[in-house]
Length: 102
Image 1 (cartoon, helix red, strand yellow):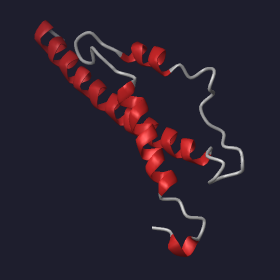
Image 2 (image 1 turned 120 degrees about the horizontal axis):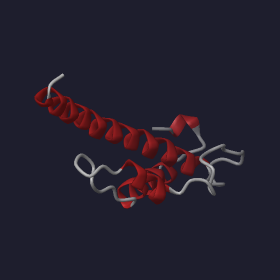
Image 3 (image 1 turned 180 degrees about the vertical axis):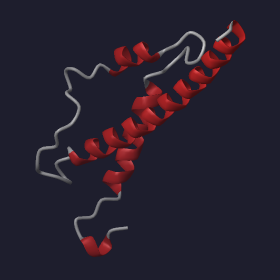
Image 4 (image 1 turned 120 degrees about the vertical axis):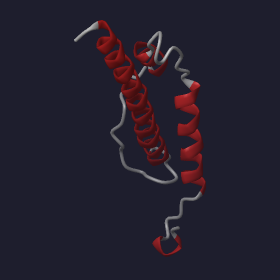
């Protein structure tokens, strides 16, 4: 590869990285939201195995994914707030009666 090709490859890899990180965020938020909902004792009395609360340092973990050129800033609120919002909708819409489930 020559320099021009390497730079093009870097740009393509960077774009793929940004896309993959967005997909990871979406999956993480989805999973964390439903697990937050399932840990609500008004909904579920059983145990839910989830992210380890002492090992999950979301803000610190997200800093590892920052990239100067392609993903220079990742805000923990962009990950945490949707979890709470989605879970709150799930909790407020919960019904224990399957006939009334939406």
